[in-house]
Length: 327
Image 1 (spheres, rainbow, N blue to C red):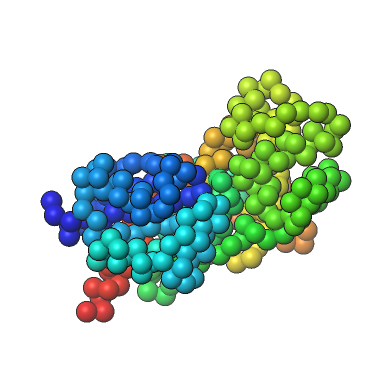
Image 2 (cartoon, one colour):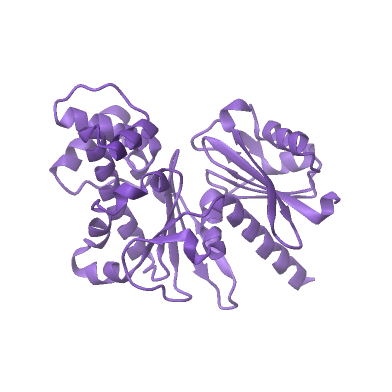
């Protein structure tokens, strides 16, 4: 197979960079490989590593990356990689190099998901053609939307909604807010609704209860909460889901997302068994005079493997179709 028959797609977060080869005729993916971003000084280095280890040619490349994509200069939010889109294309001799925001890709992935890859958490039925929202907690907090155009094509609306102000709703949350403010200054949603946010909630709640504890990783907090051996860890996860519910409900109201609110990212799927007994859905629907609107909107957790890669592939597929139509 020559390079012109496939593309390479990547989903690059603050921690991991996932790569795959995408067949341009069938749009099937293979040769999936995950790299730790910290192991590579630059994006070019990890592209070369994938090329060399998988024995693929790099001609057509499309990547989703965890930061704003609004100019030629890319600066990752939660990692040190910086690059010029034109510079990478030229230095690596690429025929195509598409860069999009990671939650534009997450939004595009929704249309690739099969019913068994979406776990519904409350609400009614999807209204076809209605706007959709997607959010995901991982190294940071990503947010995006997806709208359907009159011709039936879909268009992602990336943004930086993870960096809006976090709004406490009760006395305990005000204590968490004060703790985070004292540590970081401004309190954004990402400071709470992310892997590092889970770690911060744990310390904030320990401070609230006057209980000295050592810091724990998000993975350890989740494990201890699920096992039931640590009541503070369980309280932390429950608080995380309560705040996530409020935030997701706000997204639902922003665009009346009767197409659903979709949760991606690495944190929530690992804690799914605690989500059902949390206040996630109650807080999602707790919207005062607009609670009926929120109650009708379904939420889904995306359980599909490599959803971000699929979203990049879907974006590339649609871009190629649009280019072919114009010719």
